[in-house]
Image 1: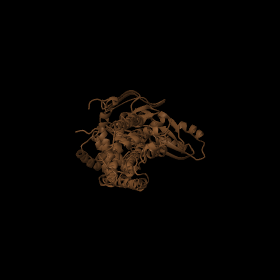
Image 2: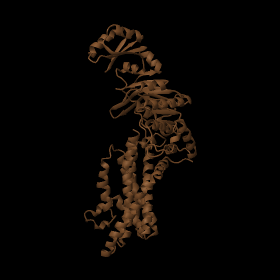
Image 3: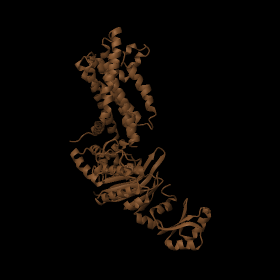
Image 4: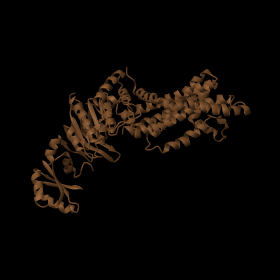
Length: 309
Length: 257
């Protein structure tokens, strides 16, 4: 495909007086894994629904696969795969029937669907479950089935809205591995997440959304380099400490200090040295921990809030 | 060869039905037999013993088409409530459908068409049982299945349009009790509307079920007035048209806003 996979300029979504997406610009190239990172309510899902042509935009320009969702919704949807935030499988039917039905929505011949379904169940490691009903499957298995289902039309573009929310760590890692393989096979991935580790694992490039707007854009690495120091010292305060006073004292140790509910983050380029200074100063802390800066810190510094808020 | 989106929705519903039909067999075959036995044979026996005939028909012949069409309405009405809200809110399969090339309007149309077809399946079973009991004097009786399908769609389209816009199922039992049940009882199903108090009689023509029942009765008895048949069909088609106008919009509002 020539040109970008998705292009948005001043893309806006309003529900009555409420502005869900406030004039955002982005461009996603073929083969990329692109992420929308942000807290709940930032406008990620509304953006995804506009891209998936199930929600008309209120303003701005949007092109998906070079087409306009307003005019070519069905044609775009025929070439896109969607993994929604909440599973919407036919739970009273079998794994196999779910794939057959979904394939028919795309008007694929049954023989073709059977071939693809067999391959896809192999791919998401559900071949041994093809005859079981969906209802009793675990959350991770349902998620994998939803991904298999989203691939039944061999999409060029896969939209994943919070793909691993609510899954245990093992299920998440299995899912990430499958998504990584898809990306390697050339499928363009667009995902939303409020997990910074997911964004770091999967995304070549991402935008950080807050309050319906994009506040930063870049590769996970670049975003950290541009916005945060290399390392972070996390100081957990003693239980009887006065937070305001302690934060004031910690200010002189780092380039920047952020106070959270249960701990204080000191941003510095040399974590061990700073942690040493804090300790030798006789500072009254329950614990002191040094770690590398992450996207979580980028978000905190840009918005003043944590992602889980 | 491509299948129209509307029929792909029907295909899905038919597959679900095919997988679950055993659980539905009771309501399909046993219920009509029970109704006909109680109303047609039990009550009908008494009616025959006392007054002989109803509108010139044996009571069993009178009540059989009424029950046939009214059952189709009941099935269509309940299928247009809980499953619709389920698809939009609880199970959310409707959201899965509109993510594919199928649009919300086509989903609505396919759903109504399927409900009509399913009601016709039930009506066919009913007709078979009724015929075995000797309650279908005319060979035109086969057309009663069509009357049932038309009547089912006339209820399904507007009720589905209403259900999709609901946030909870609180209003559904109310519709069943205050809407569907009175229609079931007073639309010429069990007794001719001429038995209604004179002040209420004109309201019978407002009941889509009455038009459906009259069509069904025309078919099973073979006694019909062509002009009346045209009017009954037109009223039912109009109900479908109004329901579809609202339904297509309501589906788009709920699923693709």
